[in-house]
Image 1 (cartoon, rainbow, N blue to C red):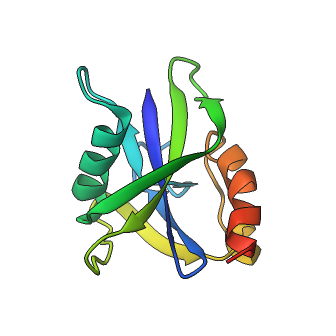
Image 2: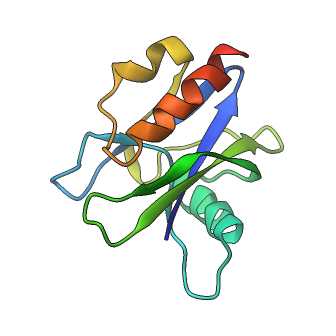
Length: 128
């Protein structure tokens, strides 16, 4: 299981550019990662956001549907999230980060597994 965070702030969502592996470097995703054995999805997301972005987040509702990853062995689940305590994300494991409005969502090349989530986020961002 892979979990991702759609971190929303001021009507924009945080997008991160992969730095590795080479076949996906430069493609964009929501921060997150693998759920470890014995770990809940939300615990994994809290850990991943701390590791990848040095931030604390509050996890909200799921967004979009389960998406099977390109290799077919894992499923991606994305949750809405908000930054806590005025934390500001840092690109510790990504080559770049951008806050994207609904109108800017198509300005980056998303990983295939994240694209359906982008579509589900569009109306949520447009409403803010």
